[in-house]
Length: 133
Image (cartoon, rainbow, N blue to C red; front, side):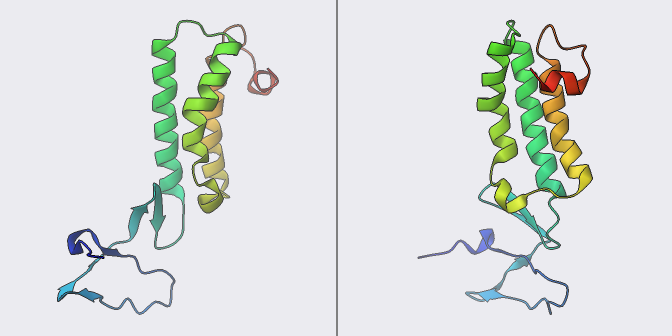
């Protein structure tokens, strides 16, 4: 199988890594601190903050699209839309990048908080009350 050398990158993982140079067909491969692979951003320090931010951005864009395009904001309409369009971006490969820092969890939960505010008749209720619907 032929490799495109310009697309090959090296991410040095671990704190005791000597960070050796890797060569392919006489060309030294570029060293990067983070790389996106299969839709997941992997960094050299295994912190998933950037992955969380990207997933939240995508989900928030979809929530904004739902807010603009759909006039019926009943619970029976918004819950299936959220579950089928926005939530998959937050759950994609979450077994790999499972957020465990409080700030990452709050960032992701902010999307759900925003989604529950879209539901008519409960948009002015407290967040814990909106979760019961």
